[in-house]
Length: 291
Image 1: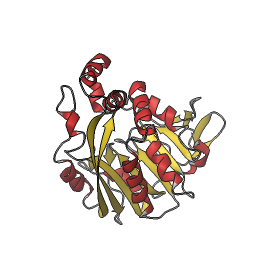
Image 2: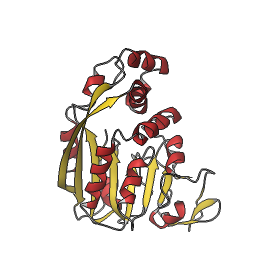
Image 3: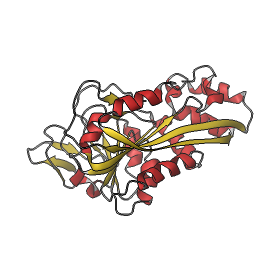
Image 4: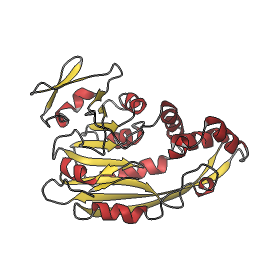
Protein backbone atom coordinates (compact mmCIF):
# COMPACT_ATOMS: atom_id res chain seq x y z
CA UNK A 1 0.00 0.00 0.00
CA UNK A 2 1.25 3.50 -0.81
CA UNK A 3 0.72 4.76 2.73
CA UNK A 4 3.32 2.29 4.00
CA UNK A 5 6.08 3.64 1.73
CA UNK A 6 5.18 7.29 1.05
CA UNK A 7 7.99 8.53 3.31
CA UNK A 8 10.53 6.73 1.10
CA UNK A 9 9.40 8.34 -2.17
CA UNK A 10 10.64 11.59 -3.71
CA UNK A 11 9.05 14.01 -6.15
CA UNK A 12 10.35 13.30 -9.66
CA UNK A 13 10.18 17.02 -10.48
CA UNK A 14 12.08 18.56 -7.55
CA UNK A 15 13.21 15.59 -5.36
CA UNK A 16 11.24 16.89 -2.36
CA UNK A 17 9.58 14.54 0.11
CA UNK A 18 6.06 13.42 -0.76
CA UNK A 19 2.84 13.24 1.23
CA UNK A 20 -0.39 11.39 0.63
CA UNK A 21 -4.02 12.46 0.65
CA UNK A 22 -7.12 10.55 -0.43
CA UNK A 23 -6.65 10.87 -4.19
CA UNK A 24 -3.15 12.21 -4.86
CA UNK A 25 0.51 12.25 -3.88
CA UNK A 26 1.81 15.78 -3.22
CA UNK A 27 5.12 17.50 -2.59
CA UNK A 28 5.77 20.67 -0.59
CA UNK A 29 6.41 22.65 -3.78
CA UNK A 30 2.96 21.91 -5.15
CA UNK A 31 3.63 19.10 -7.60
CA UNK A 32 0.75 16.64 -7.59
CA UNK A 33 0.41 13.06 -8.87
CA UNK A 34 -2.91 11.26 -9.06
CA UNK A 35 -3.38 7.88 -7.44
CA UNK A 36 -4.95 5.43 -9.90
CA UNK A 37 -8.06 3.61 -8.76
CA UNK A 38 -6.01 0.38 -8.77
CA UNK A 39 -3.82 1.87 -6.01
CA UNK A 40 -0.60 2.82 -7.78
CA UNK A 41 0.88 6.27 -8.42
CA UNK A 42 2.53 7.42 -11.64
CA UNK A 43 5.78 9.30 -11.02
CA UNK A 44 6.79 9.37 -14.67
CA UNK A 45 8.16 12.77 -15.64
CA UNK A 46 6.91 12.78 -19.22
CA UNK A 47 10.34 12.25 -20.74
CA UNK A 48 10.60 9.47 -23.30
CA UNK A 49 11.71 6.10 -21.95
CA UNK A 50 13.99 3.67 -23.75
CA UNK A 51 11.93 0.72 -22.50
CA UNK A 52 8.77 -0.87 -23.83
CA UNK A 53 6.63 -1.89 -20.88
CA UNK A 54 5.29 -5.42 -20.65
CA UNK A 55 1.79 -5.88 -21.99
CA UNK A 56 -1.18 -7.09 -19.95
CA UNK A 57 -0.85 -10.49 -21.63
CA UNK A 58 2.83 -10.76 -20.69
CA UNK A 59 2.09 -9.85 -17.07
CA UNK A 60 -0.75 -12.39 -16.92
CA UNK A 61 1.54 -15.11 -18.30
CA UNK A 62 4.23 -14.22 -15.74
CA UNK A 63 1.76 -14.31 -12.87
CA UNK A 64 0.52 -17.72 -13.98
CA UNK A 65 4.01 -19.18 -14.49
CA UNK A 66 5.45 -17.87 -11.21
CA UNK A 67 2.24 -18.68 -9.36
CA UNK A 68 2.60 -22.32 -10.42
CA UNK A 69 5.94 -22.45 -8.59
CA UNK A 70 8.19 -23.15 -11.57
CA UNK A 71 10.73 -20.48 -10.55
CA UNK A 72 10.45 -21.02 -6.78
CA UNK A 73 14.18 -21.91 -6.42
CA UNK A 74 15.02 -18.50 -7.91
CA UNK A 75 12.53 -16.73 -5.61
CA UNK A 76 14.00 -18.54 -2.62
CA UNK A 77 17.56 -17.62 -3.63
CA UNK A 78 16.65 -13.94 -4.02
CA UNK A 79 14.96 -13.90 -0.60
CA UNK A 80 17.97 -15.65 0.98
CA UNK A 81 20.36 -13.14 -0.61
CA UNK A 82 18.40 -10.27 0.92
CA UNK A 83 18.38 -11.98 4.32
CA UNK A 84 22.19 -12.29 4.16
CA UNK A 85 22.45 -8.48 4.46
CA UNK A 86 20.01 -7.71 7.30
CA UNK A 87 18.08 -4.44 7.29
CA UNK A 88 14.60 -3.31 8.28
CA UNK A 89 14.70 -0.38 5.88
CA UNK A 90 12.81 -0.25 2.60
CA UNK A 91 13.09 -2.72 -0.26
CA UNK A 92 12.74 -1.63 -3.89
CA UNK A 93 12.30 -3.98 -6.84
CA UNK A 94 13.03 -2.36 -10.20
CA UNK A 95 11.14 -3.83 -13.12
CA UNK A 96 9.01 -5.63 -10.54
CA UNK A 97 6.52 -7.09 -13.03
CA UNK A 98 3.98 -8.94 -10.91
CA UNK A 99 5.61 -8.14 -7.54
CA UNK A 100 5.95 -11.82 -6.65
CA UNK A 101 9.70 -11.68 -5.97
CA UNK A 102 9.23 -8.56 -3.85
CA UNK A 103 6.43 -10.25 -1.92
CA UNK A 104 8.66 -13.24 -1.15
CA UNK A 105 11.37 -10.95 0.18
CA UNK A 106 8.90 -9.02 2.35
CA UNK A 107 7.49 -12.28 3.74
CA UNK A 108 10.97 -13.07 5.04
CA UNK A 109 11.58 -9.54 6.39
CA UNK A 110 8.61 -8.68 8.65
CA UNK A 111 9.98 -5.24 9.54
CA UNK A 112 10.55 -4.01 5.98
CA UNK A 113 8.36 -2.09 3.52
CA UNK A 114 8.53 -2.59 -0.24
CA UNK A 115 8.26 -0.51 -3.39
CA UNK A 116 7.50 -2.22 -6.68
CA UNK A 117 8.58 -0.01 -9.59
CA UNK A 118 7.78 -0.70 -13.23
CA UNK A 119 7.22 1.23 -16.45
CA UNK A 120 4.27 -0.98 -17.40
CA UNK A 121 0.76 0.00 -16.27
CA UNK A 122 -0.49 -3.63 -16.27
CA UNK A 123 2.48 -4.47 -14.03
CA UNK A 124 1.92 -1.78 -11.41
CA UNK A 125 -1.78 -2.60 -11.26
CA UNK A 126 -0.83 -6.10 -10.17
CA UNK A 127 2.02 -4.94 -7.90
CA UNK A 128 -0.44 -2.72 -6.01
CA UNK A 129 -2.18 -5.83 -4.69
CA UNK A 130 0.88 -8.08 -4.37
CA UNK A 131 1.59 -7.51 -0.64
CA UNK A 132 0.09 -5.42 2.19
CA UNK A 133 3.48 -3.77 2.84
CA UNK A 134 4.23 -2.95 -0.80
CA UNK A 135 3.43 0.21 -2.73
CA UNK A 136 3.33 0.34 -6.54
CA UNK A 137 4.98 3.13 -8.56
CA UNK A 138 4.90 3.70 -12.31
CA UNK A 139 8.32 5.09 -13.17
CA UNK A 140 11.31 4.64 -15.46
CA UNK A 141 14.23 2.99 -13.65
CA UNK A 142 16.57 4.13 -16.41
CA UNK A 143 15.92 7.74 -15.46
CA UNK A 144 16.00 9.17 -11.94
CA UNK A 145 14.41 6.72 -9.49
CA UNK A 146 11.79 8.65 -7.44
CA UNK A 147 13.10 7.51 -4.05
CA UNK A 148 14.81 9.57 -1.34
CA UNK A 149 18.57 9.19 -1.05
CA UNK A 150 19.99 6.68 1.43
CA UNK A 151 16.63 5.30 2.55
CA UNK A 152 16.64 1.70 1.32
CA UNK A 153 18.27 -1.43 2.70
CA UNK A 154 17.81 -3.52 -0.44
CA UNK A 155 17.23 -3.10 -4.16
CA UNK A 156 16.20 -6.08 -6.29
CA UNK A 157 16.80 -6.50 -10.01
CA UNK A 158 15.39 -9.83 -11.20
CA UNK A 159 15.77 -10.22 -14.98
CA UNK A 160 15.40 -6.44 -15.14
CA UNK A 161 17.46 -3.35 -16.05
CA UNK A 162 19.30 -1.53 -13.32
CA UNK A 163 20.62 2.00 -13.02
CA UNK A 164 23.80 1.53 -11.00
CA UNK A 165 24.29 5.21 -10.18
CA UNK A 166 20.75 5.71 -8.93
CA UNK A 167 20.72 2.44 -6.98
CA UNK A 168 23.89 3.57 -5.20
CA UNK A 169 22.21 6.88 -4.35
CA UNK A 170 19.03 5.43 -2.84
CA UNK A 171 20.68 2.64 -0.82
CA UNK A 172 21.72 3.29 2.76
CA UNK A 173 25.42 2.75 3.63
CA UNK A 174 26.01 -1.00 3.58
CA UNK A 175 22.74 -1.60 1.69
CA UNK A 176 22.56 -4.42 -0.83
CA UNK A 177 21.73 -4.70 -4.51
CA UNK A 178 20.52 -8.23 -5.31
CA UNK A 179 20.67 -9.12 -9.00
CA UNK A 180 19.30 -12.24 -10.70
CA UNK A 181 20.56 -12.70 -14.25
CA UNK A 182 20.16 -15.63 -16.64
CA UNK A 183 23.27 -17.55 -17.72
CA UNK A 184 23.78 -18.64 -21.36
CA UNK A 185 22.35 -22.04 -20.33
CA UNK A 186 19.03 -20.55 -19.23
CA UNK A 187 16.14 -22.03 -21.25
CA UNK A 188 18.70 -23.50 -23.66
CA UNK A 189 16.17 -26.02 -24.97
CA UNK A 190 13.95 -23.16 -26.15
CA UNK A 191 16.27 -20.38 -27.31
CA UNK A 192 17.23 -22.20 -30.50
CA UNK A 193 13.62 -22.14 -31.68
CA UNK A 194 12.55 -19.46 -34.22
CA UNK A 195 11.77 -16.08 -32.66
CA UNK A 196 13.29 -16.85 -29.26
CA UNK A 197 15.71 -14.35 -27.71
CA UNK A 198 19.01 -15.80 -26.47
CA UNK A 199 21.07 -14.67 -23.47
CA UNK A 200 24.13 -12.48 -24.00
CA UNK A 201 27.11 -14.66 -23.05
CA UNK A 202 28.96 -11.58 -21.75
CA UNK A 203 26.18 -10.53 -19.36
CA UNK A 204 28.17 -11.33 -16.20
CA UNK A 205 31.16 -9.31 -17.36
CA UNK A 206 28.94 -6.34 -18.23
CA UNK A 207 27.29 -6.49 -14.82
CA UNK A 208 30.62 -6.47 -12.99
CA UNK A 209 31.91 -3.61 -15.10
CA UNK A 210 28.80 -1.51 -14.49
CA UNK A 211 28.87 -1.99 -10.72
CA UNK A 212 32.64 -1.65 -10.25
CA UNK A 213 33.55 1.26 -7.99
CA UNK A 214 30.02 1.70 -6.66
CA UNK A 215 29.49 -1.74 -5.13
CA UNK A 216 31.51 -4.60 -3.71
CA UNK A 217 30.35 -8.13 -4.41
CA UNK A 218 29.20 -9.82 -1.22
CA UNK A 219 28.06 -13.18 -2.55
CA UNK A 220 27.20 -15.08 -5.70
CA UNK A 221 25.05 -18.18 -6.08
CA UNK A 222 24.46 -20.30 -9.17
CA UNK A 223 20.93 -21.71 -9.44
CA UNK A 224 20.38 -24.52 -11.95
CA UNK A 225 17.45 -26.91 -12.11
CA UNK A 226 15.28 -28.75 -14.61
CA UNK A 227 11.59 -27.97 -15.12
CA UNK A 228 9.17 -30.41 -16.71
CA UNK A 229 6.62 -28.16 -18.32
CA UNK A 230 3.24 -28.75 -19.91
CA UNK A 231 2.44 -27.02 -23.20
CA UNK A 232 0.34 -24.52 -21.25
CA UNK A 233 3.30 -23.69 -18.99
CA UNK A 234 5.63 -23.48 -21.99
CA UNK A 235 3.30 -21.02 -23.68
CA UNK A 236 3.24 -18.87 -20.54
CA UNK A 237 7.04 -19.05 -20.23
CA UNK A 238 7.54 -17.84 -23.80
CA UNK A 239 4.76 -15.29 -23.45
CA UNK A 240 6.14 -13.63 -20.33
CA UNK A 241 9.64 -12.89 -21.65
CA UNK A 242 11.25 -10.67 -24.30
CA UNK A 243 10.51 -13.21 -27.03
CA UNK A 244 6.84 -12.23 -26.70
CA UNK A 245 7.67 -8.96 -28.50
CA UNK A 246 8.82 -10.97 -31.53
CA UNK A 247 6.17 -13.70 -31.69
CA UNK A 248 2.43 -13.52 -32.25
CA UNK A 249 0.12 -15.64 -30.12
CA UNK A 250 -0.41 -17.89 -33.14
CA UNK A 251 3.33 -18.34 -33.68
CA UNK A 252 3.79 -19.21 -30.00
CA UNK A 253 0.99 -21.76 -30.16
CA UNK A 254 2.45 -23.39 -33.26
CA UNK A 255 5.93 -23.53 -31.70
CA UNK A 256 4.69 -25.08 -28.46
CA UNK A 257 2.36 -27.54 -30.21
CA UNK A 258 5.26 -29.53 -31.69
CA UNK A 259 6.90 -29.99 -28.26
CA UNK A 260 6.03 -32.86 -25.93
CA UNK A 261 3.49 -32.18 -23.19
CA UNK A 262 6.04 -32.58 -20.40
CA UNK A 263 9.05 -30.93 -22.05
CA UNK A 264 12.17 -30.56 -19.89
CA UNK A 265 13.64 -27.05 -19.80
CA UNK A 266 16.76 -25.90 -17.96
CA UNK A 267 16.64 -22.91 -15.61
CA UNK A 268 20.09 -21.45 -14.99
CA UNK A 269 20.43 -18.17 -13.12
CA UNK A 270 23.10 -16.32 -11.17
CA UNK A 271 21.96 -14.50 -8.03
CA UNK A 272 24.62 -12.01 -6.93
CA UNK A 273 24.62 -9.67 -3.94
CA UNK A 274 26.47 -6.36 -4.12
CA UNK A 275 27.02 -4.11 -1.10
CA UNK A 276 27.02 -0.35 -1.55
CA UNK A 277 30.43 1.24 -1.22
CA UNK A 278 30.67 4.53 0.67
CA UNK A 279 30.80 7.63 -1.48
CA UNK A 280 28.86 10.48 -2.98
CA UNK A 281 26.01 10.10 -5.40
CA UNK A 282 27.23 9.22 -8.89
CA UNK A 283 25.54 10.51 -12.02
CA UNK A 284 28.03 9.90 -14.76
CA UNK A 285 27.75 8.69 -18.34
CA UNK A 286 28.15 4.95 -18.64
CA UNK A 287 26.90 4.24 -15.11
CA UNK A 288 23.83 2.42 -16.34
CA UNK A 289 23.36 -1.28 -16.84
CA UNK A 290 20.54 -3.48 -18.04
CA UNK A 291 19.61 -6.98 -19.15
